[in-house]
Amino acid sequence: MSGHNKWSTIKHKKGAADAKRSKIFSKIVKEIQVAVKESGADPDGNPRLRLVIQNAKGVSMPKDNIERAIKGSKDKDASSFLELTYEGYLPNAVAVFIECTTDNQQRTVSNIRSVFNKFNGNLGTNGSLSFLFDRKGVFSIPNTNYNADEHELELIDAGAEEIDHEDEYITVTTAMEDFGQMQKKLEELGIVAENAGLQRIPRDYVKLGREETLKIMKVMEVFEDDDDVQNVYHNLDIPDDLIDEM
Figure (tube, one colour):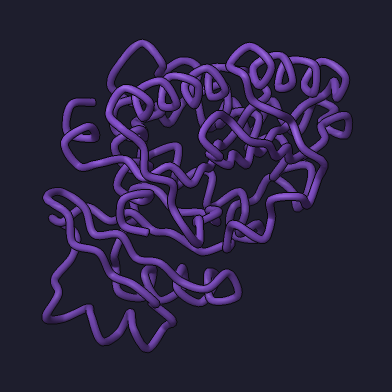
């Protein structure tokens, strides 16, 4: 699990620092629109919106951009957005689970299928791979905002199943049903997660050689570059040395 979470954190940091920044911002704006449509524009009464705002700050999205997105969401008809998932296999039995938010289902499924076909994969039916992933709450916390001696037992009591210590981040993993409880506990302790959300964690991993791993990682980036794609999950085991090269 730690390898998956570490890769997610590296992607998150890298994306906030390079040319993908605007694409990340556009995905967050879409999340804001859906959250406002769901429960209103007041973060205090809308936990989903509050979480999106927190994650927006984690990738250094300017406050003005966030406020403009919320205001625009109140005026914009977000009712056309659909939240969809797609599942399939890439070569060497690498399973991929893709979460999308789209206003055009036909365009999205066509794009996703095209990527699978281009890289010799197969788009499966919904639910065909769900048994390979567990949905978990994942919180990425900067080391500077965390004190193990003071906080560890508190987080375990709040439902932490795993607490991974990396160089710059602490990754806390909870059961899906404990996500809200952990969110409240972090707020109570004054701990600000740079990124938090429900992720799909693989139960088992596929290990490949270096070249095959790099090829699959490039396919993941192609999926992520699609404007309709919000998250991409997979069960590829990525060695630490390849992660460190990113």
